[in-house]
Structures are given as structure tokens and as C-alpha cells.
Image (cartoon, rainbow, N blue to C red; front, side, top):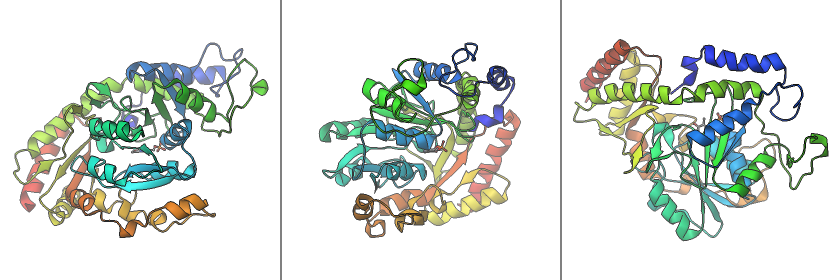
Length: 397
Ligand SMILES: *Cc1c(COP(=O)(O)O)cnc(C)c1O
């Protein structure tokens, strides 16, 4: 997945152009910037590549989720349905707005289980937030139908699956709002950065203002701008946007490498009857950022994960025990540990997750092993890796 592996002359040249003008900020300083608008250019490039009307760059993927929710009017006490398997940013962005993260179980796609989603809807539910973990997507068709039936928003977290598609549409462009991260370990990187994409003019305008203190961005004098509503600072810098501008031009090259490496590893593992693969919803194509497979039970999955590590196969993960990605290890959320007092809405409405049955999530996560697909491997390295992985797994099943 990581674009940082292929950081080169193009990235340096883009950054140098910003350094030459000395204008490191994305807004204003029109006279000094010598025609350089890296953030605006990257937004245009994202709009084209993701086939959307609008893209708003922000400082991180977490900021993108927060801004996306805020732009759609999500606030105190609103409930947002999110999966048990994701990154901590999902609930952080919801909590930041005083809204309530409602965890919902996953199925063999390792993303939101549509049946569980429907059961979790209450009259306070505002948003369904699928997270396309590890390069593959949620069943977006089923989720959209639920959204239409209950008048809810569909917000796609495509941070780990940029370049994947569903029904021919780029992931992130299918829902009402989509979010990307360009942090250092994502498929393309800005160092730090993120983006909100949407075809909704109002959400876009709100995101544009909200991410810059509520400034209305009318006229050429920032000091004279009015503030239609409260905002915050989630701006990206020109330096970060410059790196991303070089990287997005290489996205399709990166995706082709991922697909090739993924296919070699998968072909090797497909020869083992005990190994099955994560289900990709009909109509979807992965970004091939990870190869994720199931062993027949949790013990074997744990064993396979340990054996792969011992055999020198790095960057494989057993997410069930992972502190960042599976809800059982989110003790700070489960125990409501915050530095200051949580808002009363969050405190009152946050479900007691220890009392909810997530056995279906446990069933799938417990059996899953996920291996990062790197861009920098040589053909020979991938083939050696494929052979070692297959041999290692065969020796334990
Ligand atoms: C990386 C990531 C984020 C947050 O991105 P940052 O840019 O690191 O804040 C959100 N969701 C998922 C699924 C991610 O992998």
C-alpha cells in the first residue's frame, strides 16, 4: 500500500516549486505565489480521478471524516453507525462533533454487515459509515438501499482502499460523501493529509468553510471575510499538497503494481484447500492494498500469523488482537476514558459494548490474516514470498 516507498524526483520537484515562492499556505498571498496553487491543483486532480464534482483537501484522513460529518450537519447526540473492524479515527471523528459512534458487526467482507446495520437503526441515526478496510469494500448497494429506506446519509471511509471501485465507480464517490487519507502509510501520501469528496454542492461549501474557521472564502481579503457558521482549522499546507500532487499522478502505476503482487501471492495461497478469501461484494474491485484470507479457525489463524512472522514474512497482521483496528482492544472507548468530561449526549447514549453480541464479528476477525502488499518488491522477491507463505501455511494446517 505505501506510496512512501516510491518517493522520488517528481515529489521533490513539486515541493521545490513551493519552496521557491515561499508561500506555504494554501489561501491568500496571491501576488507572492507566482501562480503556484498546489492544494487547488490536487483538488482538481482528485475530482477528475475520483469522478466527483467536488474535493476538499484537509490536514488528515481523521480531519476529512470530521469535516465530512460536520458538513452534513451531524452534531450532538446524532448516531453514526460504524463497523467493529476499522481504525480508531472512525469513532474519534464522530466523538469530536459530540455525536455518538454506534458499533455494528461485520460479515465475511470484513466490513459492515447490512443486516446488522438495519437492526442498529434508531430514530437518532443520521449516518451509515462503511469503512473499506484493507483495500476492499463494503456492500455499498445494500447499504445505499438501507439509507434510502430510512433517509440516512452514506459516508464512505475509503482511506485504505483508494483506487478500488464499486459498480465501476471509484470508492469514495458512491456515497453522499467519501473520505481519503494521505498519511505516510497510505497508497498515495502527502506526508499528512486527507480529502472529502462529494457531488453535493452544499456539503462541499460547508466543508470548504468549516475546514478554515468558517471563512466564506469570498473576495481577496481574508480579514474581511464573514463567517456564516462556526468552523475549525483543518487546513492542509502547500508543502503537503505538493507531495500529493506528484503522488496522485502515479496512483494508477501504484495500483497496477499492487494488483500484480497481490495476484502472485493469491495464486500461491489458492492451492491450499484450508485457505479461503475475504468476500468482495459483487460489482466490486479491490485496490489490492492487502491480501486478506481466512484459516478454518482462530487457533490456526493465530498459528499461521506467528509462523509467517518467524519465517521472515513481514507486514502480516492478525487484526483480532490489534490495538488500533478491532473494537475489543479499544479500552479507551469502551470505558469512556477522556481527558476532560465527555458531553452529556455521548455519555448517556454511548452503548455498553461489553453487553452486545458481536460473535459474528469475532468469528470472521478471529480467522483472518491480512498481509500488506508493498510496491517496492522485485518480481523475484514476490515470488519467493509467495512460495514461503504457501509452504509456511501448509505446514500448520
Ligand atoms: C488512515 C486511516 C484513517 C485516518 O487517516 P489519518 O490521515 O491517519 O488521520 C481513517 N480511516 C482509516 C480506515 C484509515 O486507515
